[in-house]
Amino acid sequence: MINVGLIGHGRYGKKYYKILSKDKNFRIIKILRKSKKKGNSLFTDDKKIFFKINNIDVYIIASSTNSHYEYLKTALIKKKHIIIEKPLVSNLKEFEKIKKVIKKSKKIILMNHTDLHMNAYLNLKTAISKIGKIKFVKLIYGKIDVYPVENIKNIYQLPHFEWLSHPLAIIIDLFKDQNFEVKVNENRKIYRKKLYQNLNILFLGKKINIEINFSNYFKNRKRNLEIFGTKGSLSYKGYNKKKCFLKKNNKINYINSSDINPIKNLLENFKSKFKSKKFSDDKKLILSTTNYLFEISSNLKI
Image 1 (cartoon, rainbow, N blue to C red):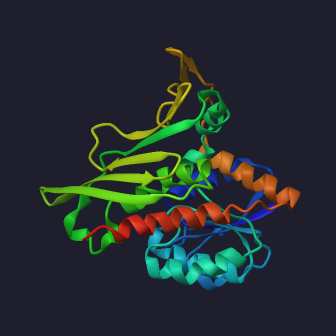
Image 2 (image 1 turned 90 degrees about the vertical axis):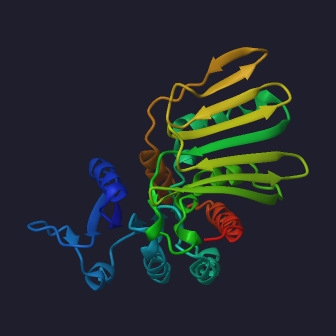
């Protein structure tokens, strides 16, 4: 049995709660949220009470980004396993303070980079060898996501900061050993006191080039990946499980991508690592993705 301390009971906290409650391998010991839930002893709003509980194996941090650093730091000090929502922390200063501690940790640390736990993406990865030498990769991410100008005080509150971890994680996952030069172009507009951001990011490498297009004002939500090789191409559309396919010799072969539930897959991944006690080093991916996120952000102005 894996004992869980769940931090946050908002949109994603509730998703974790729903899946954990149905899995006999997990037991939720306590849920920390902003306010108590009357008549339910499972919930508390008292941090001291929550972190005094000793029989918790893993903290799942699904609270707001600006609270991540505090909870992450406490979890690392208490030497607990960690599952955390992206982005890792809310600003560069926090990242500089915490990254060395993360590197030294001998516990499981996983981040919910949603695409990496999508069945469609996992199945697509198995087909990469069929398209020959990879030449170019393109990612298009975003949706209509309104950001009032008055709420944006610094670069870490711009729309890209909550979104870019996803395509960046794919790049690191697929091309771990590549060194890239990063170039960023940005366009913005303000309409009715709301900010709309469009980013074009180029990852320029010796063997491969990658392009990310991000926007918070696409008409339709997009979570698209295209990989072009010398013998064909692969396409993944995270919002449509039927649009994962291999294109070769002008023929399209759809790749099985049913049963999409990334949080369930993430928890299954954690469960496997916990039971085997063979902790693969996912920290490198988390730190590299976060490092790129801050590098890109540093090229922008408020």
